[in-house]
Image 1: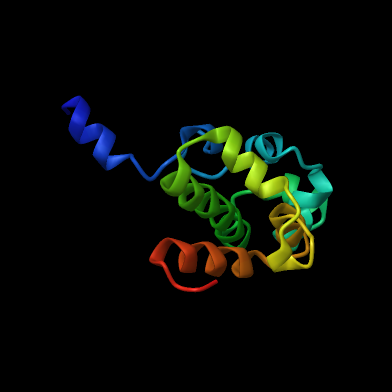
Image 2: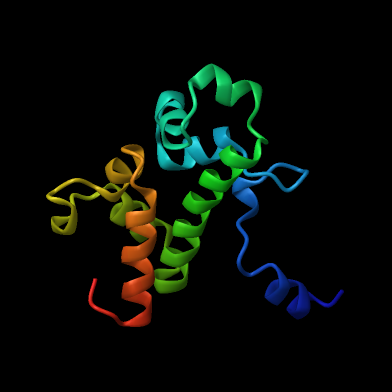
Length: 125
């Protein structure tokens, strides 16, 4: 496969978040975001022990993929890892001064997804 074709085919993926089987790895995502295991577990609606035992369950993977999707949206808008992390961690007036990562940790991940999709489309947030 040519390099350009491969780049296009995998442009929406971030290998740093996935294991060798194509599942989002909660530990890799947690490390990138600077969260504790209990935060990631809360986001996906599990206890830390339950998440550790079954990280590949459909429900867990669905929620983890939403976080990766948020990263992909941000990357498509800025393509700068420092800015992505800054945006995720900085207080946001849209969320009463909470950072997006705090909103995600409260289980309101869809709110962040919708906010970013609206910005990308040029719609008012």
